[in-house]
Length: 163
Image (cartoon, rainbow, N blue to C red; front, side):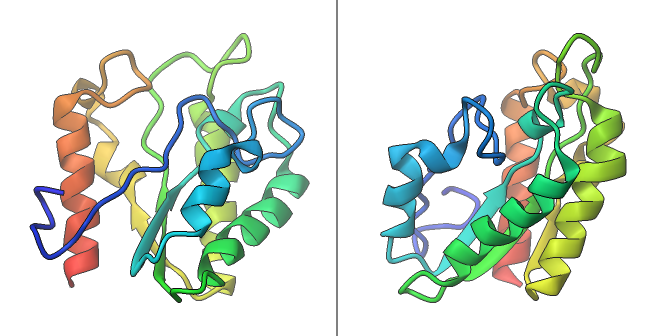
């Protein structure tokens, strides 16, 4: 909010530990927040997904591509006709073994699919991965951004929306 100023009203419908993939027990589309967010009279929508989907027990490349397209389209088709942005997830600095979020999967599969789907839907991408790469200091635990990380991410989002 502070990065965009009083002209904008920022609402956060994000939830921790959620996935895009519907087969997961923690799928965002099964949350009330998802349906509430679609009812907003938003001018802009930023979507960040894929980090939790990168876990080895959850990841499914074919389903992710289809479900990402459907998910993004659900915001494109909102009654308010918002400008939609897809954010490439931040760098993961934890070990991707033992079912944890996996940076290799994120880089080699999730991010290329998000770029492909975004391009096919003519949706602009905000590259949060690049902004956080080589900045492990932006994370409190290697996965969740700390104050500085959130500040940098907010600046990147605001810069894109304001252009």
